[in-house]
Image (cartoon, rainbow over all chains, first blue to last red; front, side):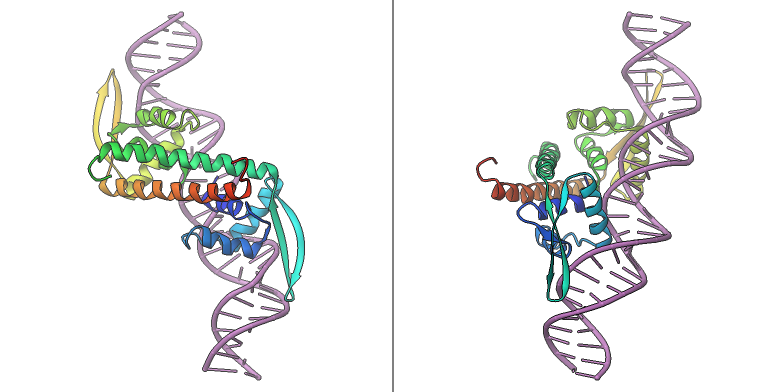
Length: 106
Length: 106
DNA sequence: GTACATATATTGACCGTCGATATATATTGA
DNA sequence: TCAATATATATCGACGGTCAATATATGTAC
């Protein structure tokens, strides 16, 4: 799973959000490192829905604009959990290598 | 940076390795989760060399077969370091969310 | 002698992201 | 009042990295 997809799932972990809300939350989660683009977001949401990791929540109209909400499925939560563990493991393996190679600077 | 690329750099962190050695090391590092394919490896090595993250080391002939070694550059080491930190941060952010949402099961 | 492990290399297909563009409304400021 | 910016969803073509398949060659094990 690639970074934008991972951050979309993470943004939905605590509550349903609409597309633009996801963009803002990903900005927050990544400390503005990842600027989620509309093209990435909406194609990703369609794909994740087809995979059963995300599903449509309610539609709302706020201040004259449509808000289309999405939420994580149970499976989406599990997949995110497994993915987070995988990332942590990758980081740990690499950091162990780096420490072994540079014991005084690491 | 995608997972195979990250694991290639990690495999080279402690010592120079030749292509097939990288494939074996990635298998070890990932607990056989990632099977690095030749098409991925050799195109990645060319790309990483062009980016200055990896460079050619010596060529050896062992048991009648050519071994072409590669090593990390200083910059490659720095990039790997930054990348590992980024992965750890991603994992941490997601895990915090998951804990917040499932305080009794996390 | 056949299969498997070792070893490097190329090619086309595929998938997810990027960048650009489109459309529409609300708000802010000149 | 008009322009710029923020909010909000959506589509499209280009691009990059990986996958899958294929090619070639040698050493080892059965």
